[in-house]
Image (cartoon, rainbow, N blue to C red; front, side):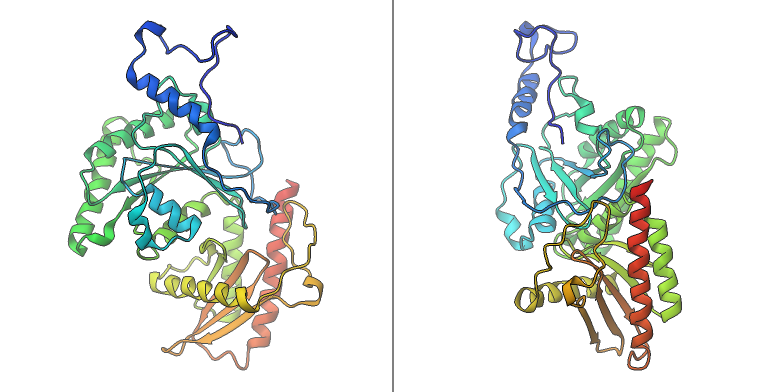
Length: 389
């Protein structure tokens, strides 16, 4: 992953580039601030992880390196909640403890080593990254999605203006970047006021883009909060857009649901609680919350009774679906108070399939296990084929 750097002049005696159309005698305080942040970038905090990358999910349209590793940019005004989102989703910090987080003063980088190896860059909100002093190509050139966080409890007109300016610039240079808007901190609003604010923000953004000549711009909006599952639901939708095999995986899940009479099926990334795919039936937030909580239970139990997989080397682009050295993949079934069943089957070290069913599993569990094993093999073939393309 390349670092964000300032453009280097041809004269080797100069250590930084001159501002466009200016000279050193006319440098503004804003330019000096930008250069200081750029100098801090190589020292941006990044968690060190010895985990070996298992496989990627396809090449991104903007990836110059072609490694298929998505980069997500988390941008927004100061105190909009960017650090809280990153801490809760990627560091499992309890939401109540985010009240003591300081405002982001330098670029933060989080790496997620799981089913998908992706990076999240949190950028300080007080800087204009479209300024000519920045190397814009290094910032946005390998980005899969730009996540703009708007504080729904604060004045948001300035945030909307900066967002629209960013969208208009990216549409000219990097039209393949997905623009995702998180209308955040909605937990503190009443239901009516939350919906009114959500509609008002969407309307203002769309009207301004329409006035600039962009009808139906490719911008997605989400209501999010760190105090419920909405932030994980939003990240799930963002990540799914970066998986080129998503339609195929959805088709496999639809086939599994139809043959086993499954009400709803989710394919979860266990470490992040992000579901990378589901069948095409409408997503019920209540069912997703149950499955997400089920993941927490399984992870907690696995830390006590789980086993470490053998150190088998897996080629990049492959899914480990072997016999695990004689161990069977983890499996669990629970009965809910309403009579429904939750069926969990471990697909590999990182993925788990969770199904919601209303029929008794006693007589057809063997059929479900067989069909899930077929789905598991098909999933491995999908990513093997993608690797060979």
